[in-house]
Length: 70
Image 1 (cartoon, rainbow, N blue to C red):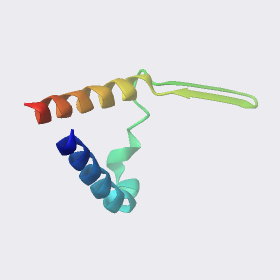
Image 2: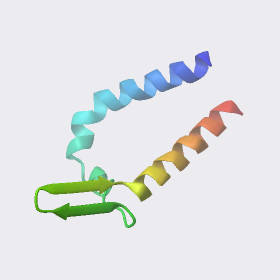
Image 3: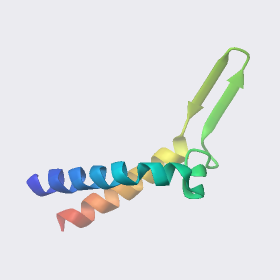
Image 4: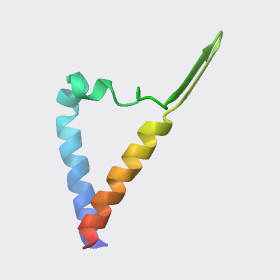
């Protein structure tokens, strides 16, 4: 558990330091706009549910955590 918390803290630190660069890069423009993400706009109402993005993020995190536990 200690190793997991240390790794999570380091990942958050690196992402925080790289955030200004990542926000401007074109790589992040497709995240949240994948086929399967639900976006409904009506007059005075907007609903967004990133279904595919959530599944991909969950899969990646699951693989990373599985790899760290080995």
